[in-house]
Image (cartoon, rainbow, N blue to C red; front, side, top):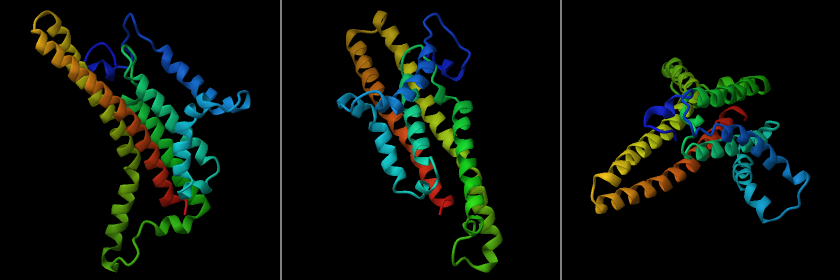
Length: 231
């Protein structure tokens, strides 16, 4: 969350207290989480850090994406990365990467294309048959194939827009509340000040929950899409 309302949309916006280094450290931290079992013993701290990996891995094992080599580790890394980036975006003066379509599209399109290409190579007949629902009337077959093709093509777009819109909306609302809160310190009575402070605290906690849920939904939908392409 940056200094003003719409600065979260500007990845080139920089202020005196900008902490872009946190985003770079995010990649190093994720690598350490995935490889710490090599040089550390299992304890409560390592178990806590591996909770995101365990959550998404349990979901992948119940899907057909398990048949794709390395898909479990890929989804675990994606979920952990989104989780960290979403939470770091709530830190003051840190640009939220996941609120920008350039970031979300860069994640969704390659993953979606990898599922399509792998299914087309491994099982082309099943992929083509998936475009037409079973038992559909012959007269509607061309229309149903067109509808199903469009629905598959827009999946990466809906994934990207959902994540970016939810994160951007939350940052804008937090910016608006903080603007009124700063004014309340000098202008409004104490009752209004404490009311706005309570609203700001509650909404910030709500945004933390949204960050966790959106990271899980993004990874979960990619996993569910693998059920359509990895059978």
